Length: 356
Ligand SMILES: NC(=O)CC[C@H](N)C(=O)O
Image 1 (tube, rainbow, N blue to C red):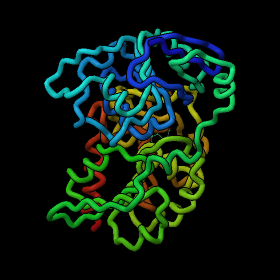
Image 2 (image 1 turned 30 degrees about the horizontal axis):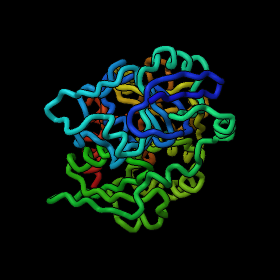
Image 3 (image 1 turned 120 degrees about the horizontal axis):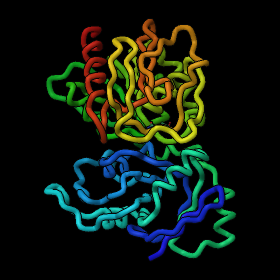
């Protein structure tokens, strides 16, 4: 069945649908990873977006249900050049078409993803509508009227507090869930922590009651500036315990400390972004997925830059020593991508163990 893609700039592209048949509107972004479609599809930071994979063959290793980063497919649609419907991998239990269908998510194949990616690079991320029906004037209006949902974090965050006990552990780490990836939770558990996961809107006073040794602020979808209440809430946690932010958590900490964030033209989404650790001049290759960044010009005196992106010199991490705050824009937990950054989580936990 045919699927049509209508971009905000009026471009219409045609492809072949797989997965679910429907009409959706979302923000179109591209990911340059050669593998990792299962982790990308289940990363809640992609909620509300349409993901174009620049790697031309997608589906070839199927779906295994062990690599997933959350319980459902998060983006609204997936666009690929060539969809492979006969996966070959010993872990695969189903193909991508069935998986998208089960999750009621639209896939489009046979699209010139190279041209589409160039367009997004030139014009920036755009709104788009995708339909398996014929594009109508009503759909064009639907696209014009669309705005990215400001309450998207509340849709992907856990609803009730959850505690993961780790036998023999005495380290208690909290994790505020703005759409957390499973890999972050796994890394905390692997490093021997008890983990308490909090809904995004949990009051600071409630978190403080739990006697934590440190608190993680997770990744998540959307614009950090849409989270006014969360920003006010985190202000009450500053200096009370060590804090660590990843991606959206990093952006929120910057806003809490009085710095600013802005929207990148087309974001960083992929598995091979080089970042320089400015404290030891070493480069690590990182997994990334973000559309916003912390504005270097807005940093306050107490904020020290710890990592920079070597592709475009944007900020990839900062710390405030006196307040025990650290954060990174990239994904040290990987999932998908290189594991160079895993050690960052371990080192933070080790620091906390020394403090405790
Ligand atoms: N992975 C994330 O946490 C993404 C953060 C934010 N939504 C952004 O796009 O920049």
